[in-house]
Length: 309
Image 1 (cartoon, rainbow, N blue to C red):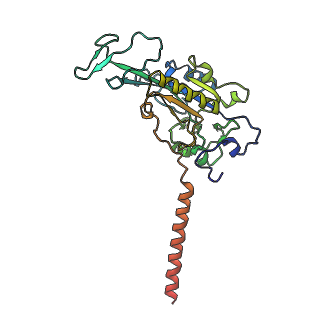
Image 2: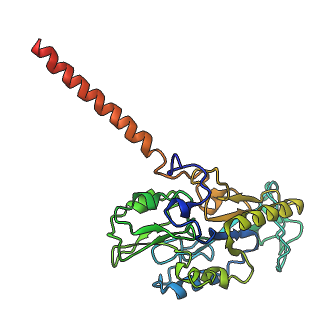
Image 3: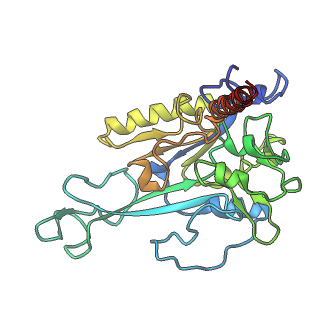
């Protein structure tokens, strides 16, 4: 590779030094169109990885009382409530329901048509289980001074908490805001894609526990093909807002190892619309700094030579 910090990269594990016979790259495909918000993935993740509980905090964000990914929450199920307007009809995914919300009449701010009653309000929920993206170009790994973060043979990014010195460089480097420092011991923590389970041929706990296959685990190339087919199916069914997020190897992070099918703009789910690996411009920054330093040195040398004359 001419530039390991950015751009498409076919084999991150080989680029990290793993032998050619390493396992194929694996990842997550999260299909939010079939997420029911059960939080089984959150519970399974905490149980398997023995993560501390977060306490009961009523945040007032629908049924989302986790809030965000953190050092003790490596899977976060977001509940996004949206008021439906005439220009954004509710998406019917064929899931069991009490009734389809009606359209919102903007002149009266009341629900009309089918629904659960005129006073029920026209709302829809968008649910999505967020996780570390295991980027192809992982800035957290690039900036770690102790080697606590490493690229596994499966192409995932793993934190060794016993090597972490708590400097926090990875926290500010992550374009997704995934990594967090645990207050009680000062170490950085995030999803490992159940690295210990992968070594035994098992799928990650969250994917194993998901009852609707919203979280799908497998070889990354196969997941990308499956995801594209799913988007086409949804669009043929009239869900024009269906889109993939993080599957493109040509994006700002070289493609994610954990990508998503969304039913609205990424910002609605709390995801950055155009993430870029924060270490991408380091070579050009150092080059500019070197030119500046040489310019200053040349100016100083010229000044001394002028005084001698």
